[in-house]
Length: 74
Image 1: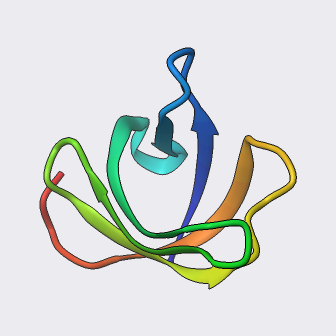
Image 2 (image 1 turned 135 degrees about the vertical axis):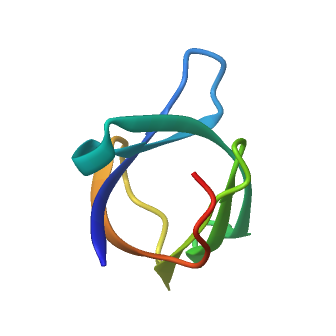
């Protein structure tokens, strides 16, 4: 499990940041993105995918979370 941060870009898109590797990339899809259920599998622009436990949508961003890498693409 890795500590990550999710924030919004100036355009309003989600941005993924992994401090351990200094990796910042756009999130191209998120399995759940409603106020009641947010998270699940997220896919990055570089082809990588991570999983965060679904939860209620955060009241504000940025947010720090624990994520599990689903593949080795980075």
